[in-house]
Length: 315
Length: 298
Image 1: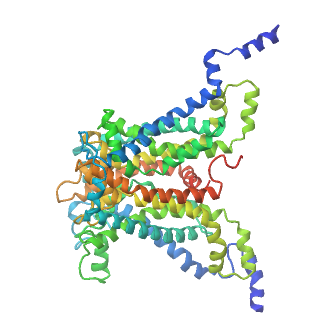
Image 2: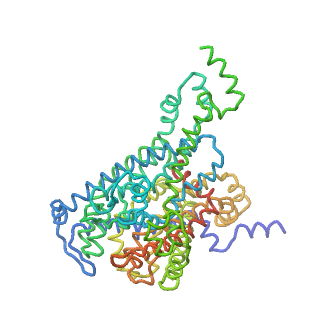
Image 3: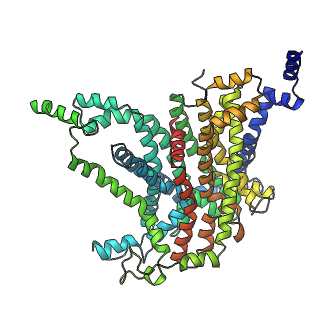
């Protein structure tokens, strides 16, 4: 008697519980919030952005279809052309800087040194702190009259005889921004590459040492090939986020002096939001997409080679 | 070549960390000196932020009579001005609210999505996972203009909800990816046992999977919190009134007025705005590092 009632209870849970145990329903319910958010606030805007790029929409009004007019106007716009060059130059130089210095730092941290975990925590600080806030600190460091760098170079070391106008001339401003970007990017690169370095078995280095390999040979033949997969992934992310960087430039120069340091993202903002030309701003943003697709495909194949996507290891 | 043979036992005795080419003076030059340089460069802007915050204006703008690297007469005037003459406390509260709101929203949706993709396993679940991952590669810089219109259409413009609902676009992909990795590390046998014992799938998620995934939840949570605290471009584009601004935007748009910059209070604002995330980070460093490295490693 007891046994039958127990079985009955088990086979007849209430309808709600049964509904939630029905797998297709449960899957739909579980995926709904994430997919809903992403579809409404990511996929739809992405499509809308591409549509807007072909219209003359302004803030608060519905624009009409103008075809390629925005892009044709941009192709003849020296400020836009300049921003494309700036973005490429900024991305390439800053990425190189970040990776050379970040890899160096990772190799240093991979040595046997005291307080390693404390060091690692401190080194990540520039990455944690809001970019805009550290950018403001850089803005102050680059002040034309009270720059601490100029003070040290001129008044302490007497290397130069005048204060540097960091943000006043186009090239000085570009380099200043690149330095700030590298400063912000080093921790991310260093810590992720350090994680990659730590997966390399020490026995490989011992074997190399027995074979008489020099430190450079060890780096060349053990470290770099084994680090390459993770380096490719970190590089993809780094390129992607440097190319679309907005905060640093907006906070430090706002595209000045005379639009010389505009990146595509800051120019899109300036035209689109304060300038109210949503269509033109969207066109600039859309112009960034081909490069991003290139970076994503690169990432996809780098990841695919390592069977990185979830689930692929089960099959 | 006898010499190398003689050296080998010595280095062996000193332990694996001291290799034959690795003498102490050499280590100082090749390891410690560069490391200290890195530390100084990476931390200097924070030091400078701190020093400027507590400097009176007379010292701030006079390098001739004072050592700029040190404070002779520390003052709280800048912080005082910031807290009592501006809306700074309000901006802090807004930022905190937006960060907490979007973190909770993203965590809940990511947990459910990750559970469905990794544990319920349906046809095409890999592709859904990949699609969510691909969403992470869409940067806010190309989205903010159309998003501004979407936000406007929904009547959310200039409200905190504009930010709480849009931040998950970059938080959900990251958190889902992180949690899929964590769920994968939990043995599936545990769930099978529970299924055989008659537990429903929701019970399994609540009683077995989630408790085991707590480290992953913490990692995802702190990552989401810091990312939303640091977010700038959406907050700049979707919020227009002074009192609804978040700290990073407000400092740049409200405290910078005219041509004369009040560096003391600007730096005070930057310092106070950085402290909450820095403190939060200090408590959870290990989780943070593991999520950062885990995200790119596997």
